[in-house]
Structure formats: C-alpha cells, structure tokens
Length: 239
Image (cartoon, rainbow, N blue to C red; front, side, top):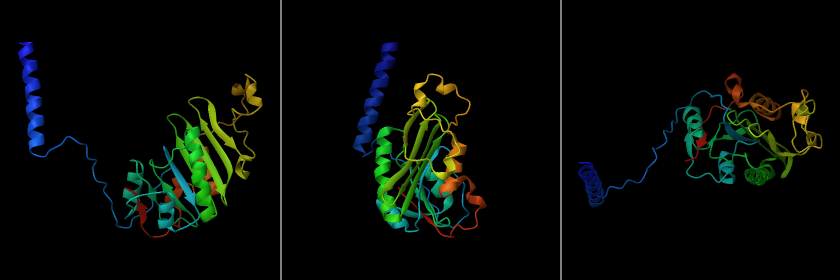
C-alpha cells in the first residue's frame, strides 16, 4: 500500500513538472513588486534595527549614483521607509542641511570586512559632500556602530557587538559628545585586565546612545516627526 502511494505521488509530481514546462510555466521565484506611493505625506520616524547614512546635500541623484543604487523611483515616506526595512534603500527628503539614505541593502558595518567597505564609501561621499556619517543598530545581537568621514578622511569609528562582548573596530579620537563617556573598548590596554569587563564605570553602547550620537552629529531619525525643517518633497527609493 505504501509503495503504491509513493509511486503515485512521484508520478503526480513528474506529470505536474511536464505540464508546467509544456505550458511555459516555471517554478522560479518572482519577488512581489514594491508598492511605491508618490502622494506626499508626513515624515516617519525610524532608526531601530536598521542602518543609515547621513550627508550634507539635497542632490539625491548624485547620492544615489555614489551609493550605486539602481532603478530609483520617486517615493513618499510611507513606502520609502517600509521598503527600506525590506532590503531596499530610501533616500529621504532633505532634513535641515542633511539627507539620509536608509535601508537594509546598505553595507551593514557589522564585520571587519564591511567596515572596510564603509570607510571607502564614506570617504568617497565626504570628498563629494564635505561630510558623511554612518549609523547602525540592532538590539537582538546588540550591534551598535557610528562612523564619520570629513573631506575624504575617516575621523571616527566605534563599532560594538554586545553578543560577543567585543568591539569590531575603534578608530580616531572620541567626538565631543563621547569625551565624557568611558566607552567600553576591547582593544584598549585596560582590556588586558581580566576584571575590565566587570568595571561599573564603563559605558556600553546601546541603541539609545546611537540615536544620541546621531542627534549630536546630524539627525536623530527617531525624532523626525518633531521637526519643522523637513522639505515637502518626495524621496528616492531603489529597487
């Protein structure tokens, strides 16, 4: 009985495949088309569990070109941010002097290799626009990162993975807002002491600190709905 059933199932699958090929049907996966809305809407806050880049410009086309984004289309905040969390990149309307590029398709910055890629990209962006910043945070693995490049040169990198209790990279002098923070640094001389990890005076990066740094350097994306200086325009969404 079991043998007959198995043979029947195999035969059914074989016939189904033959019929599909005969009629030009394939099982190739086709992702759903992104819903892209172009009706202007209000800003949407973001920042948690994602990465973004901040640059001083409103030249979205040039920014998209440097980021190597393909098939960009005009998009409002709603479809832009929603798709940014679904492996796309959204270039926002201008926020004060700044424009943000946000999305899971950007370089993640959560490994030594991707940080090297980010350094090259940020230096290229800052050479073009004067300054470029990167921020990333994800609470599940406690990944937190902030980077800054000015006039083509990297000034600051602080990248930390709480899950492993180690930094990925620490470079440059702390920025003004970091000077009063005794940030954990697994590369420091002090970290050679086995009791270093238990010190109560250390500050461990978290997503709130990432937003605080972002606000001091440029734009805090979790407070966009509070701002009055966001240009009433559409952004760009890459496919």
